[in-house]
Every structure is written in C-alpha cells, then in structure tokens.
Length: 189
Image 1: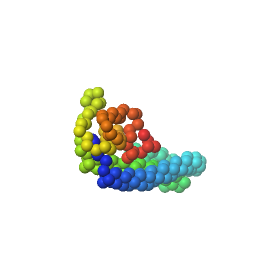
Image 2 (image 1 turned 180 degrees about the horizontal axis):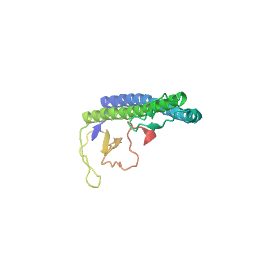
Image 3 (image 1 turned 90 degrees about the vertical axis):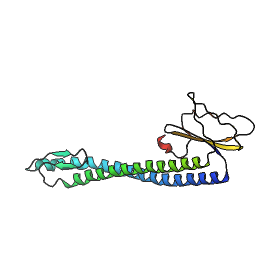
C-alpha cells in the first residue's frame, strides 16, 4: 500500500508508535519480572524437596506423590497433609509459572492490538494498493506525492519504508531478512 506523507498521517503514526512503546515496555517489564520470580521459585523448590525427604521416609505412613498433568498440582495418595516447606515451594513455582504465561500472553496481545491499529491507519490513508507478482515485484504508477510510505506485508512479516519520489522511478527492495516494522518485539525477532 502506498501512503502519501501528510501531517495528519505522520502525527497519528508517531502517536501510535509512542503508545506501542509505552504499552510494550510495560508488558515486557512485567514478563521479565514474572520470569525472574519463576526462576527464583523454581530454585527454592529443589532444596525444600531434598530437606523434606528424610522426614517423609521416617513416618509410619507411606504415600506417593503424583503431579496432575492438567493443573500441575501435586497430589498425595494417602490424603495426609503434605510436608509444608516443599508444598509451599512447589505451589510458589506453579503460581510463578502461570504468571509467566499470563505475562507473555500480554506481550503478544499488546503487539497484536497495536498491529491492528497501525494497519487500520495505513489503510485509511493509503491511496494505492498493489499485489506482487510471482517474482515478488509490484508496480504503482502515477504517484502524486514527493514523499510517501510503502507498506508491505508478506505472511507474518511487515515492512514500512519512507521513500522520496523525486524525479523518476524508484525501486524499493523488501527482501531483507529482518522485517522493518516498529510494532514488534525486537528481543524475539
């Protein structure tokens, strides 16, 4: 899609970028905090298990511990209260694991929401659309603006590039390995 540069588009585009960066940075910090908490909880789980083993072996009743595959909860076969330190540690690790999943989901949601807003803005201001041929080439003729943006989408990759259209045809290559799209999590690209 071709978007002629205009004050309105540039202002809205910059506002969208700022909003994305704020939301994404906040979601990313929450994810990194959740991941650090999970690592700490997981580190605490092993020593608690090792410490409680002698106590469980000395008891008169034997029990087995199984893990529920769906919830991750540990269940004791004799229905007796499980050893306290290990239960607290394993419960903390399970809670921390869920927090990591929720935080990662939020990072993806922020990206998806802002992607939708950016594409809607581009569509609103686009003056021409072209589809690439089998070789990946496209052509847009009779462009009136001297400065324009070209938005390209291929699968789940996106590019937006500003082009100066002074005096004659302009070739733009979008075959680079890294998509040039600001609404992305660069730490996972």
